[in-house]
Amino acid sequence: MLASRPLQGKVCLVTGASSGIGKATALGLAHRGAHVVMACRDLARGAAAQNEIQAHSGNPHVDLMQVDLASQESIRQFVAHFKDRYTHLHILINNAGISNFSRQETEDGIEETLAVNYLAPFLLTNLLLDKIKESAPARIINVSSDMQSSGTIDLFDLQLKTGRYSFPRAYSQSKLALILFTYALARRLEGTGVTVNCLHPGFVATNIGQQDLSPALKALAGLLLPLLGSKPDEGARTTLYLATSPEVEGVTGKYFIKGVPKKSALVSYDRVLQERLWEESLKLTHLESVAVR
Image (cartoon, rainbow, N blue to C red; front, side):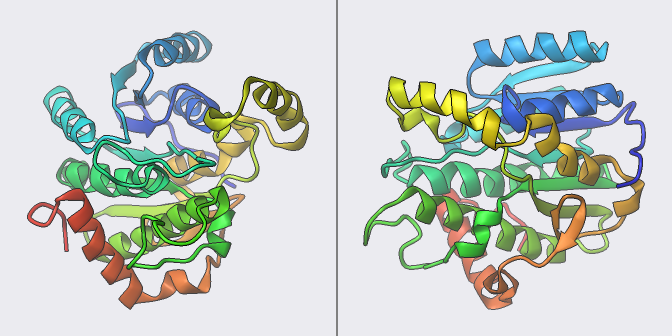
């Protein structure tokens, strides 16, 4: 992977930036001189991460904004505040993600893993798209997972109401959907100066999925994950590469692992499925009159 460009004057938005890969990504962008906007659900944790990033990078231009990606109303309010506060958005990184071991629904009545990992990036990106296009050249990066390779998309049961619910089933579906969205959006953005790519960050030691664990299992995970997984800064490398490298200038609609374009699941290239998922996502996010088609 080639060296990155300085990012002075560039506004970069990172979701899930209070910990893990998101925090490491925000730090990497701050080191490069970007004006970083951290989108976090927990303001206390976000503020602690913000202070740490500013101190380690020496960059005072690291802002914190609150958003609950499980709430479509919260996302809409966030976008309104963002547009009031910033004139540009050069880099959008949809990093935040969750994994649940039991089926849960959001206040919008949507299965939570699908809502946060897929529909939130779909809604957030579409609502910010005018700002992103005005800022071109600009980049959108979606953090997926290699678990997409085992995912399936059943448009009649996206919310997994039938059959046995499981973490792998819900998580892999959400990450596969994010890749289909990436490819469909890349086609729509041809000629705009905006690129969109997705990636697998590797197996990284983060706190994702631990919200459902008992205290004892959380303690065990805290001991084992650092031994088994990569560090967050290693997991952020491909994200930062796609956000900053001149090597991928103009590259769009690709899936990357360790900075190299790879093939995603065969079904992810099904354009009919991409478009049907897009239409269903418009309905689930009430975006029919807003999103690009």
